Image 1: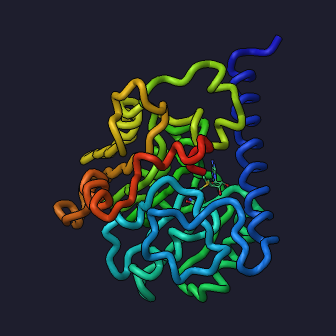
Image 2: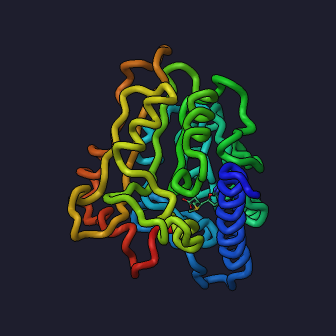
Length: 286
Ligand SMILES: C[S@@+](CC[C@H](N)C(=O)[O-])C[C@H]1O[C@@H](n2cnc3c(N)ncnc32)[C@H](O)[C@@H]1O
């Protein structure tokens, strides 16, 4: 008889396989696109500064974590689920030649695309590592800032992701990510739908659950800014959010950094509608 734990493990493996296949297919589509063509995944509305990037540096994100990260020259940055590399390349410009950016991704075709993009961009302070965000191939307390864009919702073990994020950050280090949050619990049918999972929907957490799990991992100064009205039950279940938190201690405590709420206020006058992010054509963000 299959135990509950075995069943859960099987479901988790199925989700990871579906996510890897979905993003592998997208990466191959981008790698095969003809010059001037635009494959699935766009350099989204969140990236006014991404225009100089090659067409293959696509975004599957639901926000712009680099915009709230407050990156300083010389800092070390980790991007959880780095995809085609856009946030890594933008971070690399900000941390400069004395800084270092490492993108982590589990999908080989996506890593290959990111490597090709790195060569096109000529980024010498960026590297990509194969790995899962639940067990990061990164040393303890070696990182100033963690960024991530629409990836943590895809993990079947968020507590492991938050524990790992905390482990690799230096005391005072910042966690500055974009992700999807839920406005209502998802149904069992939604949770079991692997397309919804890889579309960044079924695996998302409720706002309060996200905060509680970050706190349990040891983070403080937690701020979760949701685009649109979190409690609008007539609206979509899924919303884009900017999430900031900090590992306690360290010299950078008290350093000013942008929280997501400020960024969402900043986007509104620029006409960049974050609230619509997760409902684009009913297809989700990713
Ligand atoms: C929605 S895409 C986002 C990519 C990128 N952050 C962006 O904004 O374009 C999700 C990416 O995360 C990767 N990914 C998903 N789950 C992962 C996990 N558990 N560990 C490592 N990478 C993961 C996928 O391979 C894919 O490249």
